[in-house]
Image 1 (cartoon, each protein chain N blue to C red):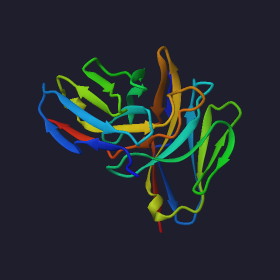
Image 2: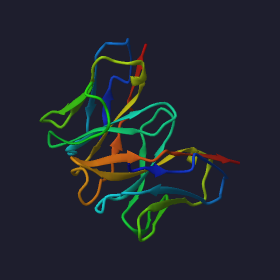
Image 3: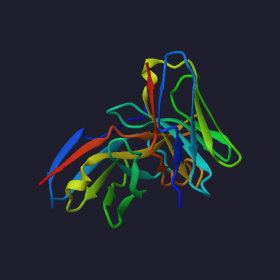
Image 4: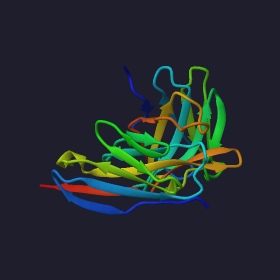
Length: 117
Length: 112
């Protein structure tokens, strides 16, 4: 069975540009969450979606946006890129909704490595 | 502001038991505590999850005291391949829903 897939795996952008990262969850998983991981630090929560609705948002500026499609895949968009946006962007999927009785096991993709020059 | 803390690094030798503790305040009443392992340039991998007391699976044990303000991951008889960063993950309540916050991560180095 395919795991969580993310694309692209690596990309280079310049300051001020826009980027779109894509994520396909494991089949049957309805929840997708996004994380930013700067080198040497733990993943920082950006967004969580369940059944195409935003269910959680981390402390990131409005330049960051996301959406979830009817097939449960997701996109993360970042506008007006800054040097500090350089990081590994991780997508995770899970079966159930966020919070509630448990957070559920998260299945992570290998990430998209974004470099902003 | 909710915060989780872990030791930055730990060193061990093959065959030893390793215990990594995560401190977490303001954990949501209904949220579980989950531990993940991460190798360089890879996404985190699930190790174990628990709510309270003790949980055990084929690779690790998890101890959670009654107040749930901390948790301890126990890795029995570590090997070189266990060298990785270990994160605890808990959910913290926010106005619009739970925020999933990773701990600071513990770099475990296992030597012969």
